[in-house]
Length: 322
Image 1: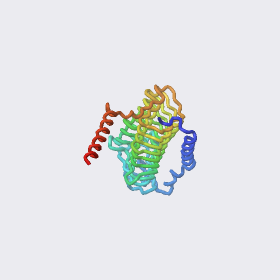
Image 2: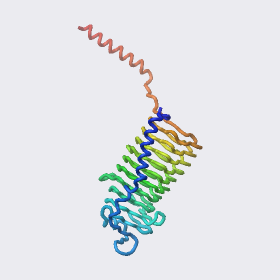
Image 3: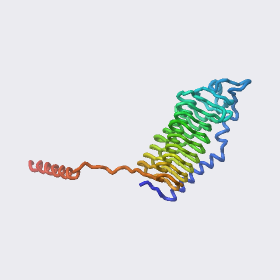
Image 4: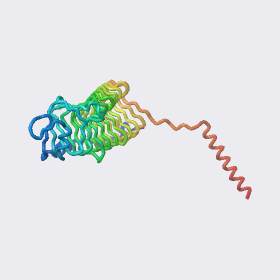
């Protein structure tokens, strides 16, 4: 059995530790924003010097810690970012990057990239943060819609996925694969097959204060450990939270309501803390699938006794020969 009720001491210690992390991030936001204060600014879609018609051209010309500012409009591009820059759109609701069904809309292969103020759409992956050359400390704050996957993090750590509107992507809103120590907070995620999916070895991530509505599965963990799922609202989906082969996760203080199948589904996932949470109007609040008992072949015990007797007889005959 999982430790549904656990020990209060362990629970409080874990929660306090993660709350201190959030307090640190919120009190010291400049850690995320001050890196571009001394860089140059390049413009896209405007007039005058340092202005470009292509976002990728401006990115290519920029250097680390520069800012590329994009005026409102629709830009049909597939972007590759390999340096630490700020990519800033005029407004989420009027500045569009349209992949036009490309493999990705934005591919990040760098660290300390800040992307904010866009609607990112029509790619296989809206934003793909790849661990190629190791990628960390990126900040994403946009509207991401009408892709196959909204955001994918692969082998990437310490990223902040914050205050995005993620909707109408065909499969995953946010997908993590071998991604650790990321903060996913205050996003609105709706109408996805999987709102957030943590795939193999995506450990020690914090999923905090997100709003999920009308998703197939709100949050899904598969072979992922030591994650904190805290104060999320998961409403009007099929399954609120699903854990499969995942242990030592903390699922606490979430609001889980009106899910058609169950609020929390546990499959071969022991030793998780899943209290307290607020449940209302789910078909079933918590459903657990345990490992099936070992099945022995019929007559296994009799067969074992016969084998033992034959072994004793054989050894006895050898002794008599001497």
